[in-house]
Image (cartoon, rainbow, N blue to C red):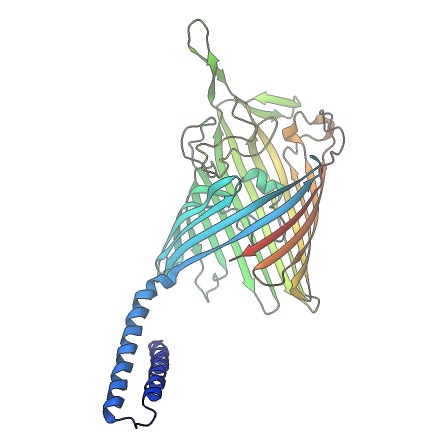
Length: 446
């Protein structure tokens, strides 16, 4: 390596000297170079090489600094609103600094909504023991495959409904350990992520409307291997946490001026009674199990990718929505459910769902066809006319898309989402609502 750097320095020095020589020759076209001039040229060569060496040493630390990002601008037609909306879906700027001991990463999201934090974490490792890594801060929850699958690479516009519901904004505040098998060993293709997280998404850790001060445990055990024309991977994930159903101040007594307290409770489905029952205690369980698999291969047609996930577990939510409580990612100071800030009981539902992708490039990576099916049943213990509130309704989505990438930095995307809701006896859901979506997007990476 040192010889290569020396050679580069000498070539630059010789080029500099050649320019100087041309100037000298033009000034003294009729005078032969003297021995003194030759010595002077050699001295200047040594000076230039020394200065280049010093400059290289000073610039070396900056080689570990990286700035990258991407911008996604889109036009979206939503059938339910019967309108076309233009927006900057994502405007990411990522700065990272890394060396053999670890890395520091800061990523911001800049859109017309504001500026928000997407990543802010430190990663530490010991060079001779790089199979163990510690990471802390705000980063992707280590659950499944789709969460950490970058939005700049993902073939569909958005993540699956089940992941958007269980993990709003994908990130959380916490710390994790990663263990990877040593390269060349029997465990070289395996890894394990395990961490403790606040469970509030991108939000401050403090007592809030829903008072989730308990920590959550998340883990993902995975395997992946690449071969000449194909690759495969699989993983198992687990999530365990709780959500606290707190008491709320809903006003003041006009006479005594004392706070009026409303007590929220945890509701669980009673199979025998066929209805919701108030559970003992104030903690609603948040527990997920997941399995994921990926398969990719190349043929004369192009590259084919098939991957999917299946999840099952219990999910706390509101009567109107099963979405997890979370900050909105734009410097919000506390976590909340999507239903609002008022006092609500917490419904602990038994859910299941997943997705399957199929992508097919045509001859080369410039043209790609995308097909995706995802399903989310927030409460598989009830269905159809037995659904008691909007938070119980199941959804199916089938997506068809096309991607054109004339260069590696540029993506032109088009996608149609066909959405079906479960038909129930609830008002507004006695039929399949017209809520299909058409999206056109341009993405540029830098």
